[in-house]
Amino acid sequence: MTKHHHFILHKPPGYLSQFVSNQSKQRKKKLLGELYDFPEGTMPIGRLDEASEGLLLLTTDGELSEQIRSKKVEKEYYVQAAGEITDEAVEQLQQGVEIGFYGKKYTTLPCEAFRLEQVPNVEPPLRKRSSRHGPTSWLAITLTEGKFRQVRKMTAAVGFPTIRLIRIRVGHITLDGLPAGKTRKVDGFGFGNVIST
Image (cartoon, rainbow, N blue to C red; front, side, top):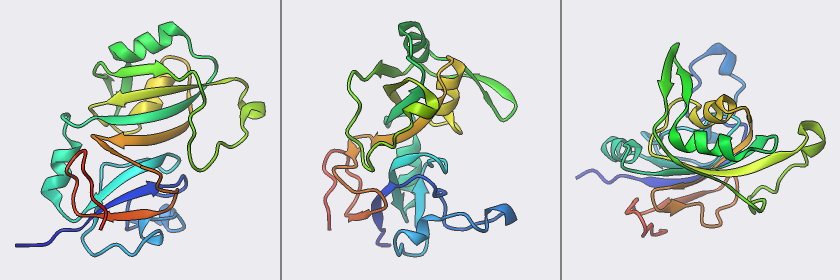
């Protein structure tokens, strides 16, 4: 029986969620292999775009990857959005909004979304952006789907573009104090009982 390897990574902004650069314009991009010496065959489970950060699970088990990407597993994000978001906009996010996806219109599934009354304690610490962007709002958004750049498209669709996007949870797995750019090898992704090795 093949022994698979599993990892929890705190992806910093500025890295692509891949190991191989397959386009000439990506040659100078930062890739996941620069953060840790992952074994051959390791793949990210889902992706975070280059500007996004936070929890990324990696495995050598393709079947497990498919299970975790399914709509049965929640993905939770902290979102810093431009402007003081309204109750109406939050309600729109909760009910589902229309976004573009590969040239077609798509209405997102209902999701959990709410305004965070306090700025979350995230690592790395918040950059001072208020002077450039004006007032901002922090939200928590939990999805069971993960279309390309979905959260960013959703907040833009309700008039409050995303400035910073941090995935904080996949199922019951969280960053659990893992610093940005660091990796933790685990025995598996038994949700709720990830065990460090």
